[in-house]
Image 1 (cartoon, rainbow, N blue to C red):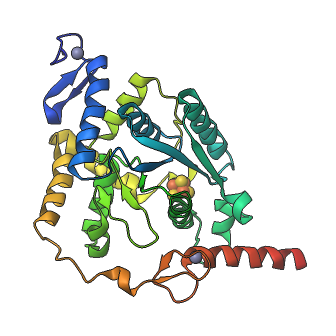
Image 2: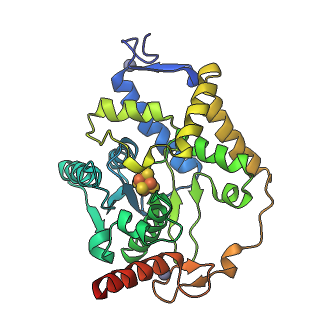
Image 3: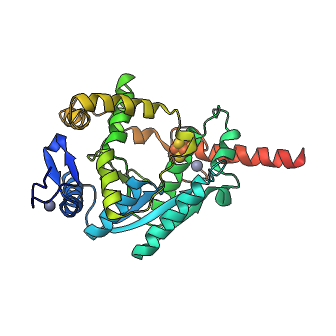
Length: 315
Ligand code: SF4
Ligand code: ZN
Ligand code: ZN
């Protein structure tokens, strides 16, 4: 297989685009495409400040690398979850993010959940009533809250995450299976800002997981290979496997599933609902919008964990 641009040996063949490229041309092509998507979906401008949520994985570090190469003003945010039971997952991923930022002279903000709130994610999950085993729902809640908090406190215009096409197609598949209209309405490359919440964007949402792995490898980005130990057995992984089977039979199926959804939405598949934000109030403690009366779900979680800790000390 030869590179379409120069005729050298191809490093990657993208059957769905009918495009094979060598290393050099692939490392040019992917950022060019990213820049195109950023403009097409009006994600952000070069004048805006971007906060990239990095986990130490290939997608988020590649995203930061691409934005840096494209000349955007992009800083990183690493949230230390304290998931270090068994394997040093959080410690290792933090080390890789720090090394990445240092090598490029980039600014990385670090929020350590245990230091900030007195309990790590596994500990917070144990104090959560819903937490039956896996800490993922608590983890998602905390990450969302902290990303919004840091973006707001440090004055970033936009929050960027490294979700790729495989992630987005799996989420879309899950939401469609249950016709979760509220989630479907919010899914897309851009979630506009609302009072107190930064705009959220996914510049890699049209790239296959395999394309992002190739980019990280060819760029020599050091990232954490291990998944979070709690990811094992997640429903999203099962959906990804199913979609992979479909893709093997029909190259381009995932991309067309996702893009057709975006098109259908643009054409009014879901009539825009009343502005839900109006029904939301600001949490009296952290100021973020919440549909619950009184404290938001995050502040309730922290309060419960700290009162349990006090109880344990007294007991
Ligand atoms: Fe958090 Fe790990 Fe669950 Fe992901 S898999 S939501 S990082 S606990
Ligand atoms: Zn080439
Ligand atoms: Zn709150």
